[in-house]
Image (cartoon, rainbow, N blue to C red; front, side, top):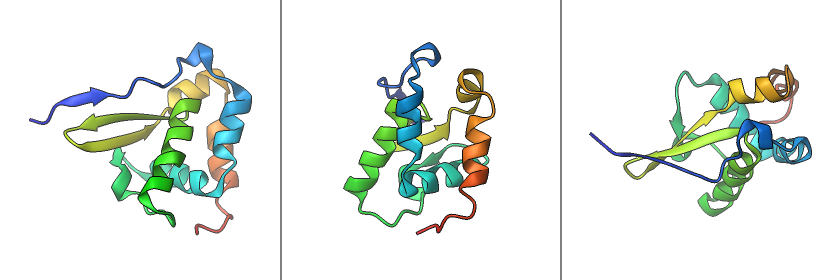
Length: 110
């Protein structure tokens, strides 16, 4: 069985900064990441998320979302897995994440 390793630069719920969260979700590429994670039934790897950018740029976007507290990342072996922090965001900002995801539905997925 592959070893699970946690990524440790995610803020605790009480340390969320709303301006940082807003900034993180304001980018179209990051909105695409949010939509794909919201549609997933379980955590998915970075490579399984379809993005119109190179891997190095994708890493920047995942980092911004993680450091804002929007998603949780962990490794299983060498795969970096991603899952939205739905419960944490709901606790901090009720209704925010579902509204962002619903509001982004009409945005071009490129």
